[in-house]
Length: 319
Length: 267
Image (cartoon, rainbow over all chains, first blue to last red):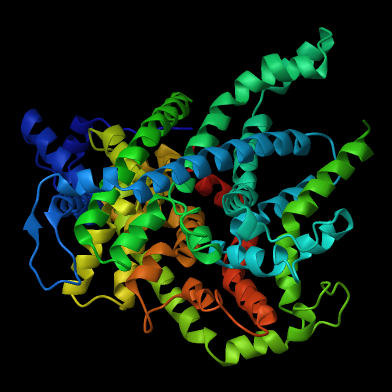
């Protein structure tokens, strides 16, 4: 991959539109600004709509402000944080978020690796299989969640129930009896293809010669997988797990469409709790504090993600 | 195990994963009675009645809103992102890596971080239930990924072409518009597709920033949550129609789609 770089002095000498040759330092500075110019609109836009609001969120979180009361916002320092950290429902939300994320990511990564290995073999119709497998990830999440709730896991008319009738689970109400497991199940269904794609790409980018050499040396399939393949695809697995975590930790659509956070608070995670605080209780102060909390949680995951991306990024630019 | 054995297993797994999608499409082709039957109807004569009903009554305005928000934000992403990607690849600024990381990090910021202030802002600007609010927000969501993708397409251009143009005296604007953009048209198409998909399916901002006028397709499905009576066929029809654009988009550009979904990190 050719990386395009042009020495600044050359550009200045050619002149962007003019043939005047300025002093080297001034020319470099002018060139620097010229290069930055196309970048600025996008940069400013993003800063304005992502960073600035985040600063505002922090500001709001230090205030007592409820849209339902005609009282103007009042500064109360860290009181909101103390309140929510003492609030059992917040702790439940955090716990649910952790449970949901870890379960969904672990299971979908494991399944994804397994299916990727399976699809990497010599089998009939690989292309079609991959197409079929991506299905769950492409269907509109809200649509899929509703289909699961009403037509697949429905205790009366659901297809899954229908299949399970021979073993006596025909009228089992999955969503109400095991709400968290059902949500995890739906998310796993949705994200396994994503994991599979990443791992499959990794498997297919292996150096075939190394594998063949190992085979010639008498290595068995299990050994080859464990000592050659697995270390090679580890960064891909990590990338999938981290990207997936970042998305699943913010899970909202599925919960909204199937359980609305219930029964009770069994499936309320942090994003959903935020939604409840902001748009049902209209408590801006508390909701903002929850938002900051969610960001901190995500930052922890994101730091690892960025580091992994950094490694892959480095490999990319070295090529 | 033989090739046939592994193939059988692979096909079984793929079918299990794909089945809910198939079921969704099939349920939309049944009558309401068939869709809600106990036990589920497997064999039936397909009918378009559910689709017709959904399209003739309420769905189209939602579809139009989705289209507006999606196309509008994608266009904005291209307008802002093409120059930015150019400034990070062909004529790189000094701190390209830092800037790139900054952009990516905004993608990782949970929507919880900016939701409340944006809502207040939208309220004060009377942009609630206005499709422009979603256009602006979707652009922000898709810009980092768009820039990353466009940049990776630009990096693949042979730099002799660009240098030849430069020697010929093309200034930066010409370089970008007359040479780079036409050359990466397939990349632009792929990036647009990715943005379209993420915007089309977006739910959280849509549900909180719109109510009746600017509601997008996912919101239409919300009406089915506590539905009573026979509605499964209509639900399935609406769900299938809502998912159709994305599925068609995938048909058009599978490889680029995967690349975009994995953020171009995996080639």
